[in-house]
Length: 389
Image (spheres, helix red, strand yellow):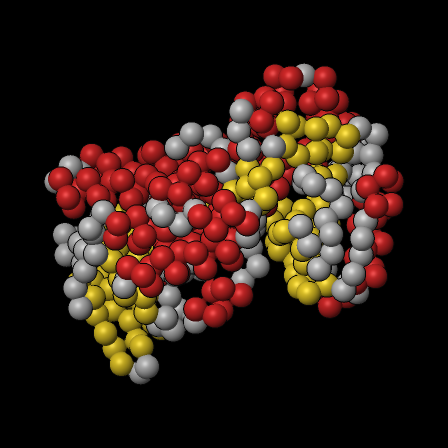
């Protein structure tokens, strides 16, 4: 088998990259280790930045998002004493869209099917050879048969535990990591959201987030210790903990119900540099992980796709390799800014085990500053809705 770009990973970043490349006449093969059904069953983030929305529209996969997504012109931050509204639209003229990552992935699968793209699921033992040469190959096992694809470029969109980053020699990589001593326990419930915009809450009991997936599907999170187990949290225990962390007017309006999904997500900040080794490029979670506090995970992967698709099209169609050569530096510049914002939001809203009496005072002062300073609110709005690509 031969193609121009092998994309390892059939999640939203891999599918979006394939969609954009195919649309420009660049051939791709997408390899995914799980089934399509499994990919579409994963519950992930649902807040799309302004730039993400625009790139999805450019790729021809924005119609259902625009029809069914929930545009949000702002969000709230609270510590029970203060409720601060960050009005994105008023401050900077932008908004975000609440539209589940699962739905984005479904739209991309449908578009790729219409294009007739080769997407091979349930592949095992993927090996990238010759990534530092001009003729890389990707081999894998499918249905017990070993197969190989020759290509010009390889895009590693296979997540934190994928093969792509590990293919880059350890001596060529620099990794930066901060592991947070807590996670987010989240539930999905078929209940009316408590508010029409997201509420980020800091309290003496810990952090909470009131979010949603639709007008009838709510997503709520609470901060828990990294040692907690999801099976120890009944629905009743979760709802009670959530109510304790939300301002009273909000908790009194909360509609509770049975959870249809419940999980604990650990929090970490992670970056691996560089994002390129020869003709292998890292995209999304293969290269970086952000805490979900700033709603940056999927959006940061999309910005990687923006830089890489443009670079690969220029190289393959026009012989211009400047974008390929600059991909890592360009993407990392935006990645580190998103890391800073996610770290800042995480620090401002969460309790840390063993913290001194100074820490909660800093959280209160940060929120008070947001309440009083339009400049501070504008800075948060610019980062939350997404810095320019």
